[in-house]
View 1 (cartoon, helix red, strand yellow):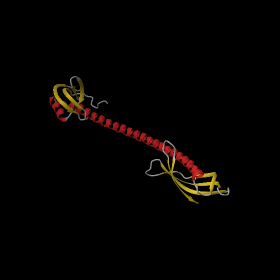
View 2 (cartoon, one colour):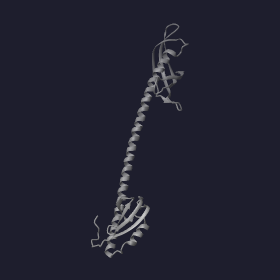
View 3 (tube, helix red, strand yellow):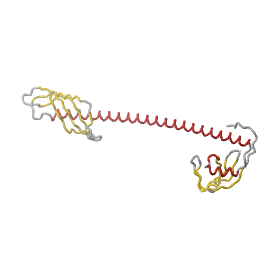
View 4 (cartoon, helix red, strand yellow):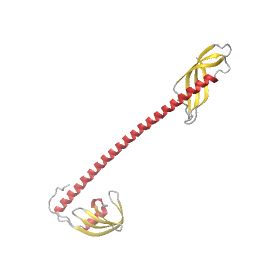
Length: 233
């Protein structure tokens, strides 16, 4: 950025040797074993040697106030033209600092938005995967429950009644419900209709019942019938 002041300035390079074991700049940067060697009044930069060999320059405004005061004691008094240039440089530095802050804020906001969008997308995908997994689990549980119910009412129910050979059955189930506090334990309600031959006279009979069953359906292995409660309609 060009300076507003265009007059002639007699810049001075001031030599000195100020040694410090540790210096913390105003921007938070820490320097150890640093020696300040020169001050350029035109550029307002201080020459420094950090450690044993690293030579660098630092803006005087970034130095702690006590070091700035010590350096300026060695600098010659500024002429009117130099003071105008210095003020223009200070104003430019302030404007640059504000611009960097705005740019940093914009980048930070953009990064935060990108992170939020990415997290939102990830959350949606996780939710979709969870729903898909739950849906697949319910489908598997319903299938296992129907097989268990069909087997039970065909071969095990009413063992001591007049029901003989069950030659037809129909099972209708409600959606399975997980049992709170029991891993892999499900409650399934449903209705069953059976047609059978009686054991005494070989006549055809039929009945319909409501039932509630508890099944254990592990992720691996076969589902097992834990309990069943039957009520006649």
